[in-house]
Image (spheres, rainbow, N blue to C red):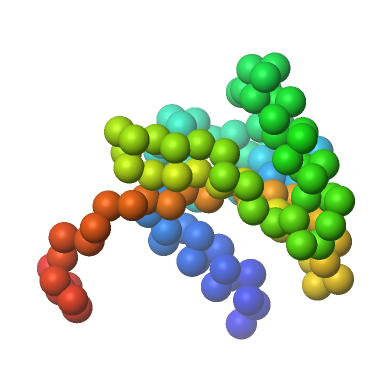
Length: 120
């Protein structure tokens, strides 16, 4: 079976929003959690079209930094105290380490309330 099917399944199952962009800032994938969060599917559209000029400049600066080195792969971009989460931009690279895009990663900091192996 194609590994892409498995990778898409992982992303689709993630409760955190995932938005993946190419180097032209075109959204190539949004998982269901991101579509629900942003109330729209931006796949095929420019991510920068839904950001103001200041945010667009920050995105450009981060992508330029990613391109400078194969070691430049994560930037902390925001904190949301109301949702107790941190947000990062992550570099996406091919097998040779060449930058091919980026994605937004949400890290929620709430402690789990379920018991270990609780299945209900």
